[in-house]
Image 1 (cartoon, rainbow, N blue to C red):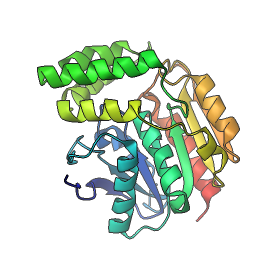
Image 2: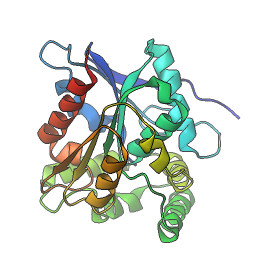
Image 3: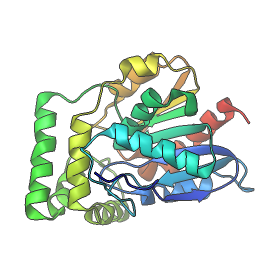
Length: 264
């Protein structure tokens, strides 16, 4: 068994530490706009940190059995390496699952919480079976080509997404490693429910969801917002699952509002 080193992270700014965890099967590249804009004109609004999760981008996969708890612990080790005690931690989709795992395993390291286009409940049996189908297929073929079309058709983007954005997302999916895709699918299938975790948190939180998200719909976002003791819900009109890519201005405004609530 090998333990990967703390994941490499893209970073910009000098303000409140804000960690953004990416969606499956993308990489930290999805946060390019947030890395540029959230720090603010002087770079002092936020210290934005966007790591690649296990096997994606430049991150090592390791040999451990699939578990989002490992991703959460990777983040704790990254914060240690960066000299950060507490941070606002957030993620979109799979990144949201990892964020909730972090909240369960390292609650004392949270200053705030951002959950975007994700859910705190477990997959049903058909969804778990589909995850295993994808994991087995990409491993058998040694290719992620089936994801390039399937993920777009599954509703990653809203019906009005610009062709250039569709092409950008296809390109990011195509760069995913088959081993990472299989590992992540099995880790997501095995994740723990997070309803009690959210109810027990005492930090400012933001929940963001695209109006047309069919993978983690508005009802799931509302459930999380209702459970969190101090949460604000933002529903972004006319977009799908990857709300930060489809509507970055509205997404970033929700994040800035959270940072203001967190304080200096």
